[in-house]
Image 1 (tube, rainbow, N blue to C red):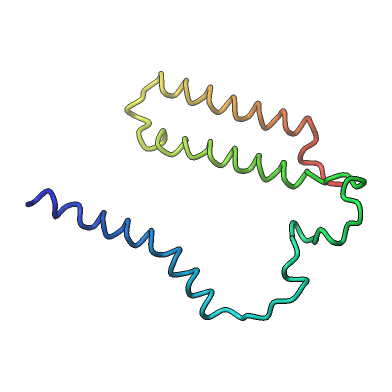
Image 2 (cartoon, rainbow, N blue to C red):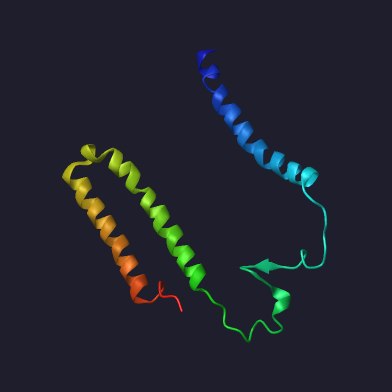
Length: 123
């Protein structure tokens, strides 16, 4: 009996986490404004509707923002691995410190490569 009681908070959290998106979507549908028009229904990306371009293949796609965003996500996810290491730094000892130096060196090498390629230069 004791073991099943300890899972009740976990079960409640999982039910709540699954219910929140449906509750928010329903609230938006019920409470949100409903004034559709043609412009609101067009495809929209990065401040431009696709109807504004007559020939999308003739223009070059500006991917610098997308590249910086992907690099941010990459380095942000890799930085997450620094937190468990920092918490248990004393347990890893010298070997863990050397491995983390190698990990940080690879990160810095990637950052240096991106900077040399001109990813962070804005026109």
